[in-house]
Length: 303
Image (cartoon, one colour):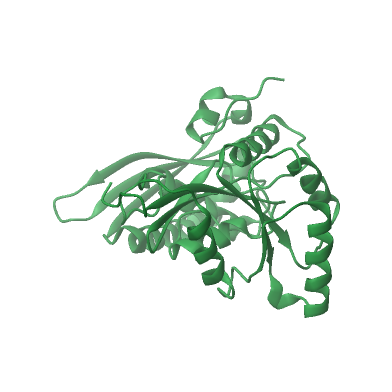
């Protein structure tokens, strides 16, 4: 790539944590642009989406893993397996804890299992703006007693507080080597995939109480038009007809609102006008279809 030589650094940094600790928000804050879905609904990140950061002479490839939780279904098991593979394959591991929750049962289980991961580990306490300083210091001390962390950072991924310090530290810790990606690339997720993720996020934002997260979005067509605009067709798959009616809404009002929000954000990211067409289809038991897992970048787990 354009950056090479003995002073260049490049490496993979996995972000590990329980659902909703703020991993996706932190990836976006470190990159400075939206590369991954952010939602109040837990377990929204399904595949290993990489955000790419250039800081001075270093390229940091951030692996935003699915939140680690107790799996109950096939999709759950695939997501948890993917998260741990991300930790074992990375050069560095950032362990995120929600400063409000502290070391709860989920965090405790993650810290226990991380002892088997040989890579250097960095502790990141997120959401520090919501917690008194004394509690932060106590939490940092308790976590460092559990695991040997090379450093501890306290950040608010939402406000950006502490994010610059973390970015600079990661840049100095990744191994020496040439860049893996062009300097201006922010993610290795294809635009078609990112566009589908954005639409999926809008579904959660509009229907987070009404629709289970077993819905998925696929970008069917992506056509560059002569007027420099893009025509995108996407299909939203749900498991039951009752869910289809929820996504459509009365007289199609809900799907129109989802489409408008998604179209606006996709257009901002790609810098082109977007014509977005959404379709809703029922695909029963799509969570048991190996092809769907491959499309999401997950390995299909056997029973």
